[in-house]
Image (cartoon, rainbow, N blue to C red):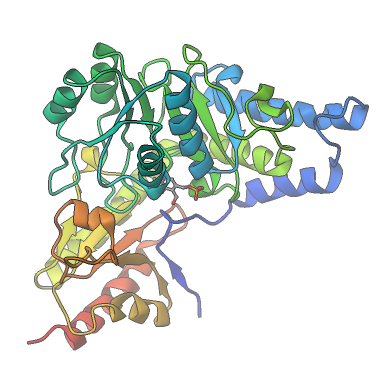
Length: 382
Ligand SMILES: Cc1ncc(COP(=O)(O)O)c(C=O)c1O
């Protein structure tokens, strides 16, 4: 059975061109990029070429790009090292950030590295209350702001320009978790006012276990991982060379084909949304769904309360459909989605996040709709 993969916000399949580029490096170039002999130097050239490619796409300089092991490490570096370098005591985030951000900031509060952690209000679609953000910035000492660009469960986008302007006005340091949008939208770091943005290559048809952090040249931070002098003393450890080369290739392809893919995937998302809404009673969507306010790769569907709600994803799975989801945490419990809880979603309604890529087709979505209709009709009490 050919499975239908609709969990691209969790990770994406590798692009064939990325694989061949990586295989070439794996089979030919094994020198350590820190070695000074010819085999080391040629591998160093590959790493620096990848850095130049990534920097060029973001309108950054190569000196502003540091390779990491993925999104989590990049987020941790921005938050831990940004806060430490400027001795910041107050951080602002939201209750619907990825755990890479939320858990890091909560730990820093617990450890006394920061004195105060404020949560900006979000509405029922996961949109930031910008007036509240301004209030928090105005009424506190210099702040570190960490607000994601697109929410990985809901798809709701934040307005990076607006946050950047506010951060500039109040002299705050601004980190945006751009893991879900890197390679899906253009990020021009000379226009954005974010001090840190991040990438996980596996969200854009690149390899797992590699990513990068952009650090604006006006910001000076120290390393999070100590060791060798790699990444210009910013991250000890021998580089994941084929991962880095694969990441750069994936970014190149993503930027080359961005407009075409955005149009194609948006149309898939709209198609699934319309069919589910029209053909299943009492279905609605969590988060923003309007094209300019919502990540085009994510559709989070809220289904009516049903018997065996936790069987919904399992049923999809046994029918050959990979998606993710859950429901909001029920009162007093931590089990469930902190994001759905953060937007006050009804804990009795099961939600499924369908997330798309360039490899999905409308025919696949037709199969999904039929399966979903069947499962819902069998489980929703009459
Ligand atoms: C918004 C967001 N931030 C951070 C991460 C973590 O990335 P990684 O798993 O590459 O460390 C993810 C991945 O799920 C994500 O969706």
